[in-house]
Length: 148
Image 1 (cartoon, rainbow, N blue to C red):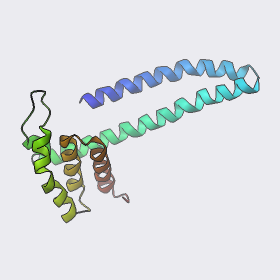
Image 2 (cartoon, rainbow, N blue to C red; image 1 turned 180 degrees about the horizontal axis):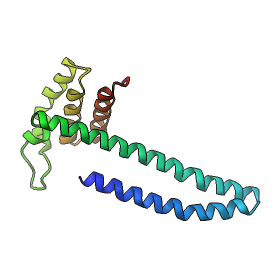
Image 3 (cartoon, rainbow, N blue to C red; image 1 turned 60 degrees about the vertical axis):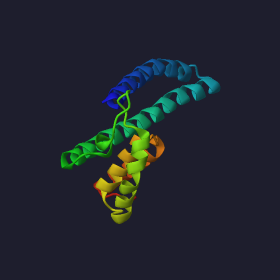
Image 4 (cartoon, rainbow, N blue to C red; image 1 turned 90 degrees about the vertical axis):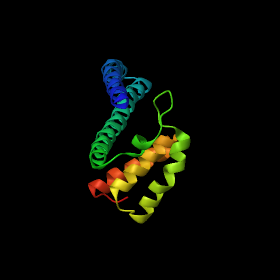
């Protein structure tokens, strides 16, 4: 839930940024000077690139959360089975100990989005965010029937 709120805040800030920068971009382009036109075009394109990347990230978040809900309805998720630290996060040492079973599940069923999602959640519980995102992205692609 925190991630969704943070993403919405970022989207709102990006929208505000786009509106404010658009005025500057129009002024630069209207100046008629080559450097001003170049700066104005960049002021339009760079925020649009940022908006596209943010939209892609929001879409990934929505899809991953949908898969997580489906998997949670079918049984406990990796972090659900772990002891918690005082902060409320799963204990990474306990997650590391249970990690091999999720890796073995992916090796047994490499085309199963459920196995990849659970592996991603196990990576997350172990504190490896980069691999967690990679595995969850793979789960999303598999569930959608896209090539991985």
